[in-house]
Length: 277
Ligand code: IPE
Ligand code: IPE
Ligand code: MG
Image (cartoon, rainbow, N blue to C red; front, side, top):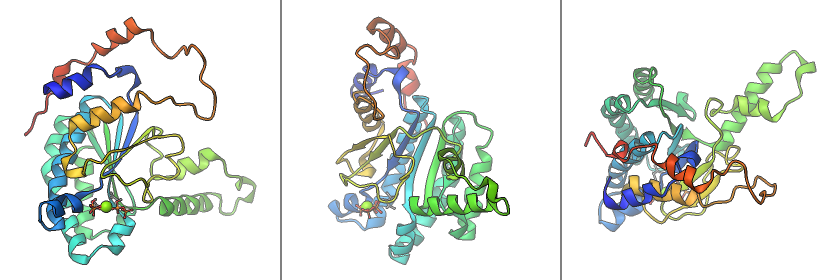
């Protein structure tokens, strides 16, 4: 940990880390434009941000990290050459990153309409998922060709298939919907980070975001590192989460200050030292 990171880290409460962080990785194009480089140079630079962020999250023992890599709209609306570059970059990332994912005990998965991606990309995705399937640590999920509205459409169609021919069972609960979402196996989303300053969700996890805290930073994605993640989590811990209710004057869940300090000592700072450069 560099001194800046160590300072932010020392002030975090390890008992109150988010369980599921989702990041809208935005601003690659603008990062490149500022350097008079083609947009794709921004995408390439973004890979280093993915690596640093993933590693820091794993070392903090965040149970789930979901990264919005590209949306269904990106897939359909961006120039063909940019989409082709992103596909190539994804394959390159998967091949290169598996050893580091294994080193950090990370399990890789995906959300989005995988079947619509090129066959060789799907093969590579399946290979990387399989190669990390036995890890038991953080669940890293890449949202690829993802759209939250499509996810809801797929969930509704899944429910319809389930109840087909059994109209007595055709009563849908909130749990039934959650069970049919792409994220059914992940913890409840509690924190969404968006880089590059845009104040919108761009069709990301619309159901899951219900009571998640939202954090927008002006940092462009290729510049995002472990320090920025730590700063975002520090901000998360300052939020008062009410879920529509009222906060009790003295919350039983809130450990007393000395206990919190002891808990902070539980994760050794060395655990956060970046490796695998
Ligand atoms: C985010 O960066 C990456 C993808 C959407 C694939 P952008 O490509 O959206 O970058 P900006 O928003 O144009 O700066
Ligand atoms: C959202 O970014 C999608 C990803 C980061 C993958 P966009 O750049 O596509 O979002 P808009 O177009 O600014 O809403
Ligand atoms: Mg963008």
